[in-house]
Length: 453
Ligand code: FCB
Image 1 (tube, rainbow, N blue to C red):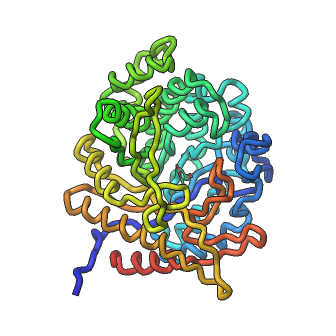
Image 2: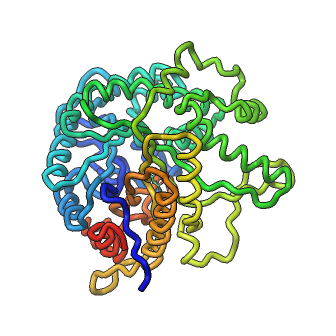
Image 3: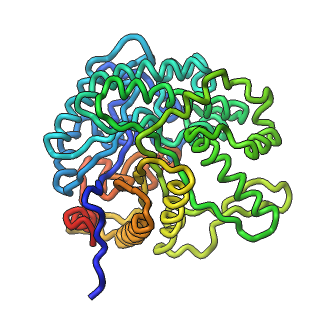
């Protein structure tokens, strides 16, 4: 008989979501406009002009969604707070109804024995602050601390796991550089001040959370891919280094007290992303950013292959053909589980965080419900199973991996892709808001029950 894979006793099995992707109710009960509201309401920005106005209607259906989590036996639930639901214009006046929503959500999660993991910022900034310049401006870090203070005072007696930011690299590069994400700015000169202010706001927020939420753990979530050069040509090797530098080391290095990596600074100068050097860095900032944290969250989905374009040496990700659904999800991101073992080992042995969580991992497949309401999403189950084996290998190698959050609990609004990509282990019929457990969810339920498979 095959050996069983069993996870450490305290290992937490969870699922993740984000406010803008599931809540809907974009203008209900005093919520202020977010940058994602403004962006999706601008025609031509999102696939099919989809918006998160209704999304999974979770703001209304949250009790049912918690019942669903209970049914699955989830031990932890990672969700994010909509900043403009708490402070409609970003600072100053608090919207008590918004606070109450999350407070009730937390109470019900705890009553269901599900540990809440709260992400403070999963990209939906208050539009009012964007109008004053947003993340490229330093005041934004101060406003974030005010918001953190308000919400951690309100929930800090019950919430004990906090994540300051989700994937700051994505905000910096896609929000302000390529403009694929809100607020849709297209100036790489804004990306690095943005990155700095996000990191600085993290550094400033950590002690505030600790003060307001005794005995809590606070960390940050970074996205990480398994970066490989397409060949051992000098250009491909250099591109893989640059890609990793831009997307991961630029964020991880300062958090772990190493400052900004100098090779990447040189890369940025070459693309004119630092026209005034590092003038946005002030005395004491790097020390603030390097504040000790209790864990790191990693979002891992796939591997990225770097092939330098022949002409301009510009970054390019290669998607080998043909796409077999067993190995290629519909994003189309490759199912590459070995990369998960790789990134866990790399981050732990290189940066020595106290512990790690996989705060996101999952696959987009659009397998629909059949006539009986079953969703035979075999490829998603395969993706999860292979990644669980990959986690187990990292744990056996000594990585203190403390938990896993599948992305996502529900099919939801997938940013620029709108509703065209489905990452949920639960199918959502957007017309009726009916939820159907996919086969992967039923499989996951058993994994949780047995703490392995
Ligand atoms: C991550 C995001 C998450 C989701 C997944 C697919 O980058 O954090 O909100 O969109 O990708």
